[in-house]
Length: 184
Image 1 (tube, rainbow, N blue to C red):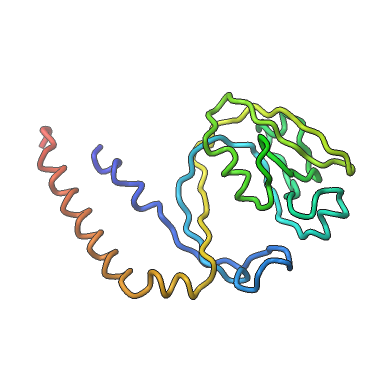
Image 2: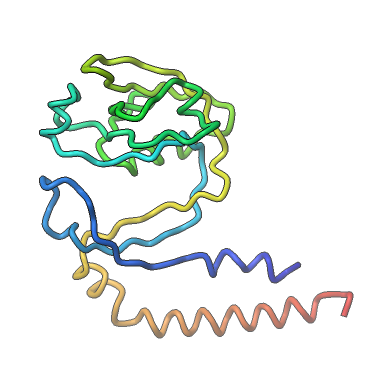
């Protein structure tokens, strides 16, 4: 039972991804480091893509805001609100959405059942839809580091040593928890 309390420590994953970001993003984002963590807050239920300012303009969105809805999940807040694939989400509750992460950030403080006003561009027309936010469940969030140089310079030198110390400390705490367990 106590072992489960320490399980989230093991959920932190580090990965390198090739970005499919629009070409107007900096060159450093082609290979960037991401830290994946459990993510709380509300959930809209869309798979969205970042698009270039040129594509935004063709779709009728402002040049500085908008992510393209690629897929709407079944039984999601987005589906119930009427969001469709091909819509461009430009705002959530008045906050500009310029990147996919902005959707999560806009809903981070929302609880299941709360309303969120989602402004979309559909057929070059702007409309605001009311979504009743769903629970995020076990969603994972991604923290993006600017580039490999940032990761290596800021964390590289002492990271292995710190991780080893952390593992030792976790092992010590697990032993102490076992000794406190009255069933043993």
